[in-house]
Image (tube, rainbow, N blue to C red; front, top):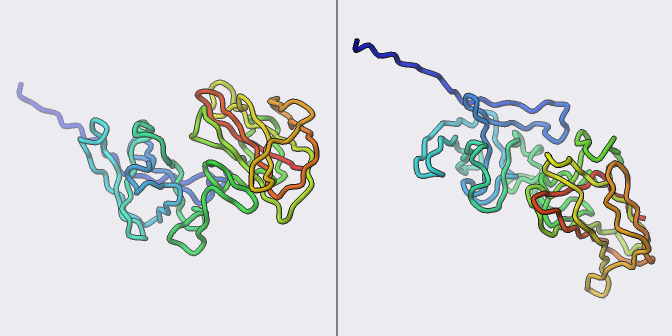
Amino acid sequence: AGDTIALDLPMPVRRILANEKVINNADRVTLERGPIVYCAEWPDNDGKVLDIVLDDDVVLEPEHRKDLLDGLTVLTGKLKNGKQFTAIPFYARAHRDKGEMNVWLARTEEAARRVSTGPFPHDWESFGPFKASHVYPPAQLAALTDNRLPGSSNDVSVPHFTWLYHVGGREWVQETFAKPKKVSSIDIYWLDQGDKGSCRVPKSWRLLYRADNAWKAVENTGPYGLATDKFNKVEFKPVTTSIIRMEATLQEGYSGGILEWRVK
């Protein structure tokens, strides 16, 4: 009687490197402590986390915060740019309004693609001729016309564009041409991960073009297709424009995305 047993379960912070075969996660790392996966969320990191560069030698320490979401053990450290970094358990995400969240953190400035304090700054939500209302991660805008065709609408092994984690609202993506161009059709291959996934084909969509400093709807000659596992082609009365925009209304509770698109 009176004996006590102390159980000590060390939970050191571990860095898990992304598989090199996953192109979109090249030079990225996720954080674990014991069985718990961590993520970075916007409220703890000055409102933005998609451009964070977590160098391999940044020291991370666990810190319990009893006033955060009824008590959480977070990971903290100081980044090379002098900013404080905080990660929370992944299970506690998305409880503090809408904003950026990141699980796979860049290890280098090149991997971050948008490095606000580095030598290659650019807007996360634009890439070359493309711009979107939202995109996660933004490098995927380049996937729209990379000619890497999917095997199906659920083929996320190829680079793809998404509006994650925006759900159920109205979103858009547009292409700007180097000079005004006559266009009359578009082919879109929708991303659709089924009922258990995050992305589905949209509820509806339409095409707009820029003319006289205003957005105008095209006069389509056929329906706006929502078929999966193939391109959806829409033809419309030819227009000459410098920008073509696709506007989608997402299904309630789901985000959306595109695997490939072709404007002709």
